[in-house]
Every structure is written in C-alpha cells, then in structure tokens.
Image 1 (cartoon, helix red, strand yellow):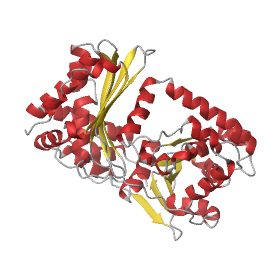
Image 2 (cartoon, rainbow, N blue to C red):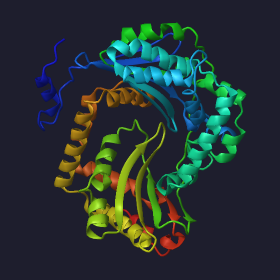
Image 3 (cartoon, rainbow, N blue to C red):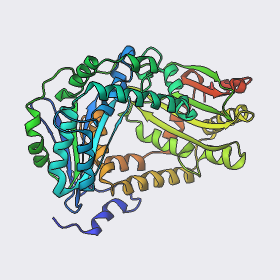
Image 4 (cartoon, helix red, strand yellow):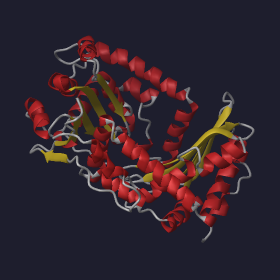
Length: 445
C-alpha cells in the first residue's frame, strides 16, 4: 500500500457535518485465554509503538496494600530472571528506542517505540520485563526508598497533593479514593510475597491488552507473544467496586504555601457515556484554551490566577467535571466567587456560537494532529478497549464533537453545575471559603 498525502484530506474536509471513514483500520483479536490484541497497521511509518496494558490500577487495591501496583511498575524495570536492569537499559539505548510506563487508578501501561527492524527484540524484552520480573529482595528495598521519596515529592507539589486530598474525600470509602503512589504507611509494610501475588493477578490473561501501531500487523504481534501466552493462566479478573460521588466541602490549612489550591468538581458521567462529546466540548469552552471563559474572566480580566482549567474526567463507572486553579491566599476567596459566577452565567445565558465553533475546531484539530503520533494512536486503542470493549473509529470521535448542539450544552450545564452534585477541596488558606454563596447554582432554570 502506498501512502498518498491527499488521503489526509479525508479528515480535514470541511465542516459538512460528517467525517469520512479513515483509510487505516484497526484489527482486534481475543485469544482463547482471554488476552486481547489490538493493532493498527500504518505501513508508511518506519517505526512500531507497542504496549502491554494491565487492567486494574490503584483502584483495585486494598487500603493496607495501597501503592502496590505502582510499586510493581517500578520493579518491572529492575531486571528479569535472565537480564539485569543495566542490560535492559543498554539494549534500548543501542536501538535508539524508547520505553516507559505509568500507573493510573484503573490501569497500568508499559510501552515502547522502536524501528521496525528492532521490534522483535524489543517486544520480547518488554514481555520478559512484564511477565518474568526477578523481584529481588535487595531491589525491592532499594525501590521502596525511591517510592517513599516520590510520595514526599507529591506532598511538596501542592497541585498534585490537592488532587490526592480531593479524591480521598469525593470517593471516601472506595478504592478510587486511594493515591496511586500509595501512602507512606502502606508502602513501608508491603512484603515480597504480596508483590508476587499481586503480580500474578495483574498478568492474568483476561486483564491484559496488547496494542500496537505502525509498520506492524496483528499476526506479527500474536506470533511474537505466542511463547509467553501459554505461560499465563487466569488468577483474577478485576472488577471495579462501584464508586459513588460524595458531595461536600473540605479545606486544609497550610501556612507554608504562597498560594491556595482550589478544586471545584461536580459529579459527571462515566468515560463511555453517550454525553461524553457534549461534556468534552463544554469543558473546552469553560477552561480548555486561552480563550476559554474561565481563563478570560479570571486570569485575563481580573488577574487572579496564573492558570485555570476545566476538564471532564471519565472513569469506568463514574466521572468528574473538575475546575482547578491556584490563587494567592488573599485572592483565593475572590477567585472561588468568580468561578461560581462564571458557572452561574453559563447556566443562565448559555454559550455563544463563536465559543462552540472555537471549541469544536480546537478539539477536532488537536485530535487530527494527534494522528501523527503512533504513541497517541496506540494509547487510544488501549483506552477504547478498556472503556468500550472495542476500538472505536476515529471518525466516531470527530463526528461526535461536530454534532454537539448549543441546547445540549446548556441542558448539560444546568444539570451538572448543582451544589448537590459538588465537592470542593481547598489546600492553603482555609478561610477562603468563608461567606461564599454556592446556592445561586441551586435553582430550576
């Protein structure tokens, strides 16, 4: 197949209401043992980006073992039963490739990017890391110290620490409230036998998704993984305990901070909700760009913050529409009042056609530009599999954004922005919430 640059026009044809089907198609196969492989062949790319994704992040942990998934992520880079960590790093350095990993509340991912000629060797190495880690006692103790320092680093980063405090309150009693990196007490108590058991559960075939994009086919991936597939047996299939959003207001006094961290969030929709396009456009209008409502009103006109953002964050079974900002301690109260005022005005008057047009163009443009990244494409395949159970054509996303109507945004805003669906976390000046009237949002529009 020869790539023709004109084919990219399929995505940039102008606002006729629909985006045409992509010339690139994904393939999906679920093996007999429950493991899923999803690929997207891009023959005109000289590289391959591949990942192994494990369903079940910190949200599937017991409180007494909080941080164990993130701990395992670190340890998988510390050597296999056959290779030391130094050999792993040198191999990837020699290839000129890249390898990385992350842990979230609902998944853990390991991914690489290499030239096609190095794929077989690199993917084999990644499989060894994930499936055959050494878990040496001395490495566990060494990495425990690293993670304890990482926990301290988060505490020293007010914006990150505020998010952990917020999650602890909004989903109190549910594992979704636990910090990804764990707590100092739990990380200190994790034993090697617990790590071994948790690892066996994580690499159960039904929890594994392999995705790849670039100059690669599904058959090639399956062949490369074949020798490992037979070694895996189901230990545990993770199911998320239902999380319930809990309204409330919580403030934490910290006299050492120059700024007060502000998180105002509302109960929203899960990642797979049919309203996801509406919520995405609404978040972009309110706080997704430098021309957004919150940025314009609170930074540009009033000078109260350096940055302010709005995001709709969908989880497997729940979601948050969150606004995050930081303001000087003396201006924190005014900043919160102005945020509530912007939300009230938005619910009362709705949005303009210009705002919707800018938001749609921004989101669609960003999505189309991301198609140039094999890493972004691979990550999207994994998220689609986790939240939808199948890969979604990119035109579905683009058309969903394009079809959002002004009336849908207004209806959604009036439903979402309600004090009964609100949770606020403040880190810094505790008195900044004093005298603020949130009830103006509590009305029948």
